[in-house]
Image (cartoon, rainbow, N blue to C red; front, side, top):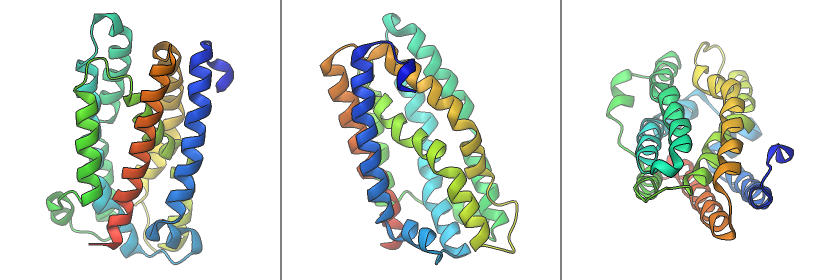
Length: 227
């Protein structure tokens, strides 16, 4: 994808974002629930807990994206349009997740009533803070981490979970949907990066936001075993 970036500063930013991603992958592999998935000790109970703890973050996703879109001024009207379209695409994702939870043996009331865990609280607060700033190009760093999960990990996770949670079926639609669609989302993200990353300062704020979101996302998953 790097060859699709025209602006030299955007290319430099992408290189730094790739390093953030590799660090994020290593950090995720140390998270207990992900480690169990990778080592074959993951259960359907683990899967339900994963969905329980992801739902609020998924719901809040379209909110901070929409808030961010409204914070771009007329000089970024093209960026605002892309971000609004992205929020529209994802605003009902949580219903797919809820249906997966029920298909995996969960009670719909439980997932609807579940509060955000500590990591989800911190992630939501940070993203909403960033989204309210004027022309919040730093949110590209957040989208790099969150959309990257769908593109790079969702299908592999779904395949692994399917093997480990038989005889349950039709309970992995959320992960598979993101695995199949986040390539197009990432393509839009590269387009945004090329559009808005014009200086070293732009790179710094985008990359720093990616680092923070990576830490908080890992914390969100860590909290599953701390509750």
